[in-house]
Image 1: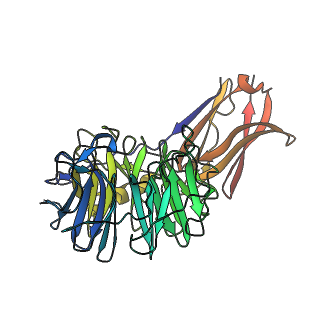
Image 2: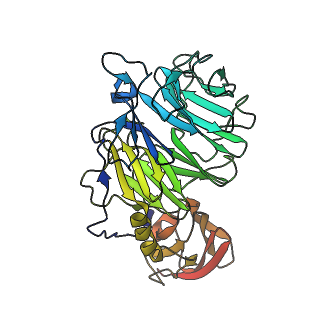
Image 3: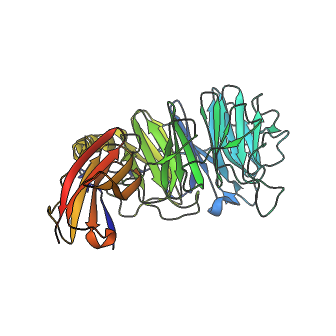
Length: 430
């Protein structure tokens, strides 16, 4: 039987006794969103299952050492505040998307005012701001747009997918991001693109083998989508997507970008999951990832990220906010970079001559479309061994004679990966 063996480079990361995550004083909350305004770090909390009771919004001005509740003006029911799904900032304006609609503060959270005129759906999942355009993605009512700081809202849902159980409802908008004038929305039915401020949306899912998109992020013109099976990347405005998951081990619920460094947080569905595999780092646009969980004995389920100066903050399910210096993690990644393939290569099969099997080895420095084919002595194609896109890494293909009925004689095998093409000779003896 044909066997394909992917030999991912095994990477061991050694952390010093100082290399660790620090839990802030907000230690027992489910934190669904973090946002930074200068030295001000805001945390929005959610109730269990992202519904019902929550503790509202908290503010820290000293890197999470202390937090103060800033909830004046938010609605309160049975001693609790509505779940806060998203926070975003425009100058002095701070917007909070909650299960009771959208609220605005102009004084760093000291007071909040409802800004929901025209919002027919108030279960707000995500907020995104570009210039004067403020978008709100909801759980069931689609996406809304305000161009006057939330005073008035209009639904902008043409082309978005409807919920199959109720045709009057839309699938939730989990994330909204901007790349120039392009607006991308992540939903359980994939990624949708609008080039006219939400007037129309088009599905952009080619290559997205899992369409449950939980989070989106943009770095220059590169778009990243976090899904239930890892991260996908698009360099052509979502026209096509490629998986970039080497080293990732779980659902990706949050993505943060710091320069050329990409962080992925794993966990359950939003804050539904209680156990994730924590946090991973890529320094090469997702071609490979390393575990940066440090000394965690129990991995966190991650909901969101924020970066202040030299620290990465992580909002989690049921375990509050954690902090770690970026330099610790990035230094670890740089020390490991020499372990990754630097060039394309195709090795001589071993053993050679062979019977009944041999191994063909090759390596890829970046994600590539790969074909590995066998030809006879006359140059006629015998079979295709590999025909797929593969991540950076080292690969071994075990070729069994009986699977392809190879007769004794000389054959050639050819690797075509990206712009790299190489052919080698092998000999079958019976």
